[in-house]
Each structure stands twice: as structure tokens, then as C-alpha cells.
Image: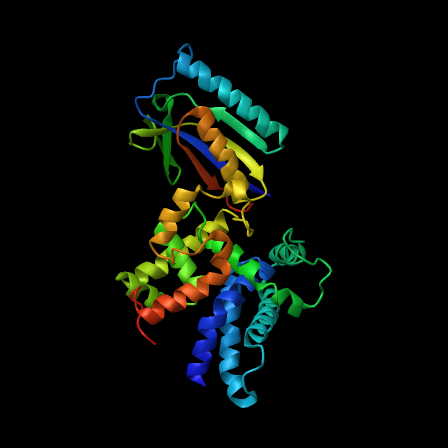
Length: 116
Length: 227
């Protein structure tokens, strides 16, 4: 069994508005998807993230640590949430990622974890 | 003898690699073992003569070298992993009672097809798929592939290395995809027709592959150096 990270990505100007029809639809779809993942025994952990503006970055130089307001990546695209799944192989992970991309209506990146 | 060995390599390397990838469950291990086996053949066959089944000899020798290497070099965990792959029953194995490796070796067409689907994994870019397939199944050196596509040799070498690493890091499985997993007809044809015989179909690709490569080389139509 191999663990993969499936992460959802949005443009920076993506607005999280839970009252909008689009949001309600994708939330319902993702809930259904999460249930399937859990039933299949593939679900390890998952969650949606607050917008990138809520992020803070800490950098250490020896034991001196500095803090910066905002996300690490100074790019337009930001991570909106992720799943960690544990499945047999790459093709199984890709099959779940396909469903994830459809459910959350956004691009999903699949990356394997290093062997523990 | 050197010419003869080169001819055997062209004809057999892809098939032997495909079988050994299935048996060992690791592309790099399989490639290194096949290369070692051919090096041994280069020393022995001038003395003993070419064996009646050169492909079978290569695959058996390569398997033995690979197992020796696993025993010598691996940590206990990776040995257990490799052993698990070796003994894992394959659901397309036509005869699960086979003990004799020679009988395993004869199940060749399925192995080539499996390796082809691995090399053409949709998670790889088209460039990577082509380079990996030509390297592993076509028995071509990176210099030959680079010459055909008019790119520097290190570019092709890097493509092959990265493609193998991606498949290994993602724990890509080694099997023939179910029909539902295959791309639709039009997507399949447009990808294949640019660099493969248009008559090749997924079912026939395993056996047509070396035929289409060698006919392309003979006719010079794909730009390979004539040998």
C-alpha cells in the first residue's frame, strides 16, 4: 500500500463563499466522494483550507526564526485543500483523483509520499 | 560474433526485459540484469556457440544475476518487497502451477504488452512515453533515439531516467489495463500514429512492436541510422 497526497488548486482570487450555489454543489459532491473513499478504506485524512491570505510562513536561520504574513508561494495558484489516501498503486490513486477532480470541479495534483 | 550478438540484442532485448520486469518487479533491476547477461554472453558464446534459445538463455541468466544482486545488496525490507513481487500470483498468468522458469519465459507476448502499457502510462508526457518505449522494448540505445528525434543524447537519457523515476516513485503497477481504462479510440490513434505503425492495435502491439520497429529501421522512414 502506498500513500498519496491529492491537493486541490485554485486561482488566488478564488473566493470561498459557502452560500453560493456553486459552493453548495461542490461541497455536496466532495462529501459524497469522501464517503466513498472512507467506505473503500482508502481515506487517511482530508480537509479544506482557509484562503491563502490566512497563511503565515516561518523561516529559521540557525535558531533565529522569522515570520512573514501570507503564503509561501508568491504565485497566483494556491492550495485549497487536500486528501491523503492509502491505496495499492498509482492507477488506483489516479482513479480516485479523477473522481476528486470531478467532485471539486478543480485541478487535483497527485503526489506519492516518500517511503516511510 | 559481435554482429551476431548485436542482432540477438535487437531481436531479444525487449522481450527479455519485459519478462524480467514482471519477474523482478523493478525496471532498473531488470535492465541492469539484462545488460549483465549480454556481457556474459559476449564472453561465453564465442567459446560455447550461440545457444539454441538465445532469448531464454539471456532471461534465465539475467534472472539469476538479479537474484544474486538482491541477496548481496538489499536491505531486509527491500528483499522482502522484491520476494513479494516475485511470488505474487499474476491474474493474467495462464498457468499458475508453473514452477519451471523456462515455462515462465515462454509467456512472452503478455509481458511485452504489459511493459508497453507501463512505458505508455498516461501520467507520462508523450515525449517520455516514446523515449521509454523505444529504450526498453525497442532495444535502442539513447544515442540512437536521440539521433532519430534530432535532440541531444543527454536530453533523451534524462527523459528515460525521469520517466522511470516517476513510475517507481508513484508505485505504478505492472499489468494490462482493463478495457474501461484504455483511452477512447480517437485519442489512442492520434497518439500512436505519430510514431508507430498505423496498423498496430493495442492487442497486436505486443507482437507487432519489434516488427514495426525493424521495418521502420530497414526502410529508413523513421530516420534511424542504418546498421
